[in-house]
Length: 396
Ligand code: PLP
Image (cartoon, rainbow, N blue to C red; front, side, top):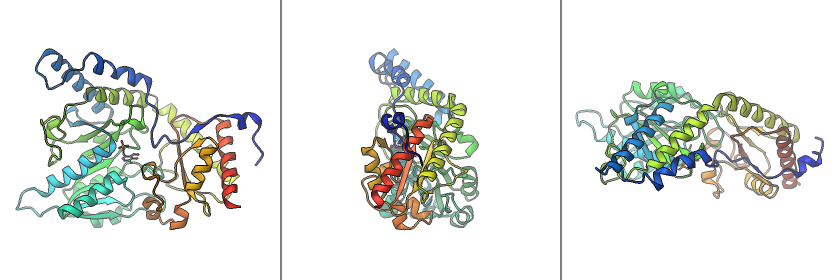
């Protein structure tokens, strides 16, 4: 590989960690402000200002529902993806298990082997404290769920199936429609964690056939700490948060009208530009992969290369520590992540990569680069060059 020219060397820092968090969109912030400064009333209050706030909340929820193929009554505003996953897994499993005594007790929770900790740890918490049994459906080398093994695991005892729509670490998109069909064939409830997919690819709760879905706004333009749980009203549910009974009693607490507005605007904006932007992101990801392969022949791309999120490049560099690589690249002005950002700081190999059949040592050499705007030729040359330098420094 030729050395990059001076303009490439002089280029500034590159943020390649959009899957961890994105900048808030100024239009989103602008849209939120009136609901904190003027229309700040509590939507449960009976006076005119309260009614106005309730109407704004409903309008924002109606737009959110429209963007996600859901009904307005199914939208519950949460404090982010983690809360949304927790409410879904724990509340639905509890609701299902406490059903009609004449029915077989439903105490199995089936998840994929590559779920985010917000789902996985919620399921194991139920196993530890409430007698549920967690079963993990395996994935193939590209992180796609094994549908025939899933079929064997789901049965009359299954309360809930939860499989993520797109994986945060390797970008693989799952066949959720088929997974939902399997769950429903046994009377189980189907939840999907759509945190990485929302705002990036078109999503319809109705088309996917799921009963519950979790999303998080800071991945596509809201401030952090804002999420949504979509939950069908027919799903048995045991509330985890006690209080004033807001949000159908599922999430008590004064509703965050500004967060609902932020979600609506961020979804509108990100989905509006989707087709043209995603074509560019796919091109950028492809060009980046090719440049990295040319610069470092030992690199192995991870995740399904066909069913994957746009703007998501994940790879392993056998023989190199992913954490060390991350630090090197950070010094050189490239911000990216090794395995899941939420798990950063831990030195264990990523359970996702292990589930894909990658050995423990190689799994620790992972790197993830994610972006929501297209990369220029200069950016790509710079990344490949800095990566080559860093890998070289860590292997000699
Ligand atoms: N689920 C997935 C797949 C994620 O990637 C994340 C965060 O990265 C979460 C859940 C948690 O979302 P939040 O950061 O909003 O709590």
